[in-house]
Image 1 (tube, rainbow, N blue to C red):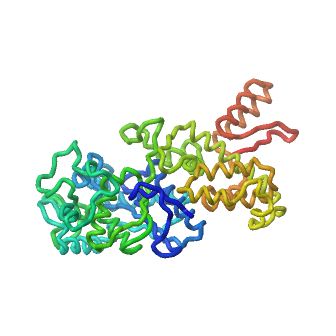
Image 2 (cartoon, rainbow, N blue to C red; image 1 turned 60 degrees about the horizontal axis):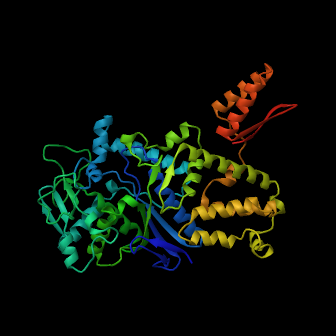
Amino acid sequence: MLKIYNTLNRKIEDFKPIKDKQVGVYTCGPTVYSYVTIGNFRTYTLGDIVVRTLKYLGYDVKYIMNITDVGHLTGDNLGDADIGEDRLEKASKKEGKTAWEIAKFYTKDFLAGFDKLNFLRPEKFPKPTEHIQEQIDLIRKLEQKGFAYKISDGIYFDTKTYEKAGFTYGELSTLDQIKEGARVTPNLEKRDPKDFALWKFSPKKEKRHMEWDSPWGVGFPGWHIECSAMGMKYLGEQFDIHIGGEDLKSTHHPNEIAQSQAATGKVPFVKYWIHGAFLLVDGGRMGKSLGNAYTLHDIMKKDYDPMHLRYFYLTGHYRKQLNFTWEALDAARVAYEKIIDKIKEYKKYQQEGSKIESYHSENRSLIDQNRFVAALEDDFNMPKALSILWELIKSDENKGRKYKMILEFDRVFGLKLAERSREELKLTSEVKRLLNARLKARENKDWKQSDEIRIKLKKEYNIEVSDTEKGQEIKGS
């Protein structure tokens, strides 16, 4: 049985969906004001692995991921998500474009990266700008039930009234974490520091690119309300799994729970909460101000394949921080390309492999698919699943069966192994330059330089070069 660490209860639980074999999954997606970082993509890899695992285990999955294009304010970095500039509006001033143009550009870039990393597309990528009425309707419901009040800068959720109604506020976080940031001036109009904005009014002397009429005045939705409105629209008032980064545990997700449960009266809003740990860079935090908020573009400019990054993500358990270094990505590239070499070799013997069903009973002393499933059911334990893949590769099992089993495992890994087994070797411009330089060195009988280039090609690009009567023979990635 699938076991999940449920952040809501802080313990491992048996997974029992609300409806038998039907699972609703929601992942908090990006705010599209800039390029998505490899830290963000680690969270989306978690969402993809959860969905792939559920499908592999036979569940019917309805998957939704939002794309935030309004309402996420810069004060979130200071500890108060209700202050500061809208991230899209701020980016529009910086780049000289409208907020709508900013959202369109970075959404397109995000989706391109999403596909390059071979993520399964959700059923829908809903955006708050396309669900303004749903958000207004939800806020009105909260207002009618006495959970919302108006102050000078917007409509706010009343956390004390919520608690007086018998609900518990802040299950995902400790209450002392859910307060106004220490680095900002408290909003004295709020009834309680933990109260949060449902609808923000547009500045009186400023025309925003993104603003709408509402029963309370012209403005825009708060950051938290979007996920409740869109989650309930597409997955129902209660659904199974909600996924996000660990930074969302302190305010965003507790607020999402509170406003949803207050509106419907149904507990829990979401049965299982899954949070991925941060990606570190060189042992420290990632940040744009530090110059290490790497993007997929940065990875690919250095001639790494997106699948090298995906393999790197799989080497760490999602609940543990993973440390990104270029050396670690090099190791992931070497490991990944070794798998590709092996599967190309095994493919030649695929007709000799028996059906996967007979694999279980014929040779239990070797790699058993049941062990792979057990790793998946152990809270999506990808490092353990990868170790089973490598045991299979190193085993004496029939090569044809190895080929079939590796492709079977890749239904969850998502490493494009079948596709890559059909590809011919592709050489980057730098590799071609080095190969040509090596040829010239050999023509000049400069054996030392020739050998140095050969070592460099192996070490940095995992390409093996040997010399035959026909010339240089290359093997690798």
